[in-house]
Length: 315
Image 1 (cartoon, rainbow, N blue to C red):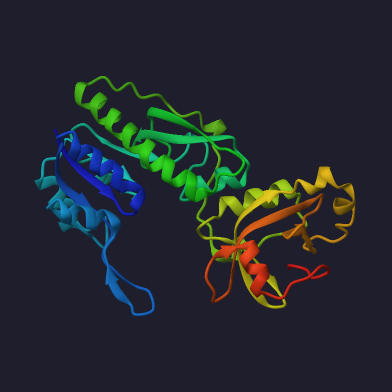
Image 2 (cartoon, helix red, strand yellow; image 1 turned 60 degrees about the vertical axis):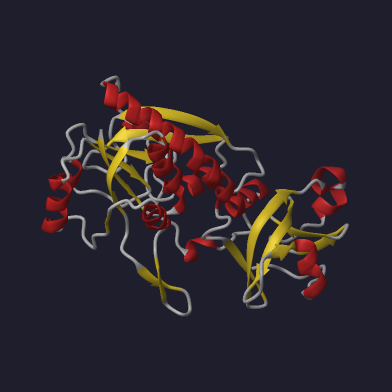
C-alpha cells in the first residue's frame, strides 16, 4: 500500500517510525516549512523532517496546502492512503486524493476535545482518562467517522507532558492497527455523537495566568495541564514565576490550622520547608518552579535562592 505521511512535531515521529518498521511503503512525508527559531534565528527542521531525512524519505513542505502545484504533486504519487498525525487542517481537494481515504490520529477520545490542544484541556478539566482516536477526515475539523480508539488513564499527578509522551506511543500502535484494517478492507467506521462534543482550542500565554481564587483542585489541574508548555504562571512583585508541578496539600487535612490560616488566595506559606500557596479552599504545594530569566528547579532549590516568606502573595 502506498502511504503519504503528514505530521510535524515529535508526537508524530513514532507513528511514522512504526509504519517503516512494519515494511509499509511511505512514498512521501509532508511536514511544515523550515523556520528560524531561537535568539540566533537559526533555521531548524521539524522533528518529522529530521526523521524523514535520516531514512531518506522524499519530503514535501508546502507553505499553502491549497497550492495547485502541491495538490498536483500529491496526486502524481497515486497514494492509497494519507496518514495524518499532528498536522495542519487539510482542505477537501487534498484529503480526497487517496483511493482509500485519509485518516487522522487525534489525542483525545472523540467527540470530546475537538481542537488544537486536547491533551492540555483534558487535564485542565480534571479528566480521569484520555486516549487516541483515529478517524477519516471530513471537511469539518475533528468530526469524521471513528475507526479505532484507545484509552489511557490520567493519574492526579500526571502533567500534559507526561500524557503527551504516553499518547505518542499509544498513537503509533493505533495508527498501525488502523492502517492494517484499511488495507484489509476491515475498517468499520462509526459516526461521532455530536451532542457529546467539547472544544479544545489553542492556548495562548495570556490564558495561562493562575487564578488563585479558584478551588485548589482546579488550580492544581491548571498547572499540570499546562506543563511543560505553554506553562502556568503567576507574579511576585512584578517578577514572572512559571510553575510546572504541584500537588494538593496534605496539610489541609493533617493540620487544620494551616488550612484555616489561608485567609487570602495567593498567600504564601513555608510549611515544613515546602512552598505552599493558598487557593480558594485550601493550600497547594509547589514542586517545580522557574523564575523569569532563570532555570527550572525544584521548589526547595528555589526557596534557597529567592527571597520569599510567609505573608507574601502570588498574584
